[in-house]
Amino acid sequence: MKRNMQHIALALLSAWDRISAPRGAAVLANELGGLFDRGRETLQIDPASSLPVPSKYLVYKRGSGVNYALVADGVGMPLGVSPDAPYQLGDYLDVERFGATVGMQLGISTGAVTMDNLVYSAPGGLVGDLTTAGHGSFWVIGRATKTVTAANQEITYIPCFPYSYQQ
Image (spheres, rainbow, N blue to C red):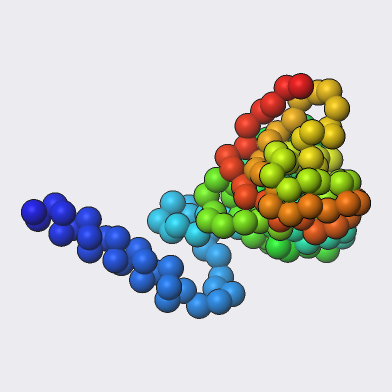
């Protein structure tokens, strides 16, 4: 009984933390990330990046160091999506980790994407439709929740933990 009460109290405190968080609250350092259920990681743009980054809502991967992020190239394992668009060296950005955030994500399409199809991390940090990707190895990052007809359009998708897919 005592253990059940502890679980209930922890669940209520966790819910209160989600409800009471102010909009636009600062993201804490990576070392503290395990303490919060927001699924965000603060990283610095990699010195090897081409700047300024051309758009928001691009997919990022780990850069040359643990605390660096690079726009995903479709080859390395993607970390997540960022609502930021860094424009100079030293800029910090939020990366909402795949599989750790709740709800849908926003991305930029590589071309036509059909609702309910699997989407993958494409070069340039874009999101592509796996059914039109051709042959190769891809990192699947979720399932589309919207249909778009051309490249460089906003696409929404339900993210998942990235996994490698060979076709």
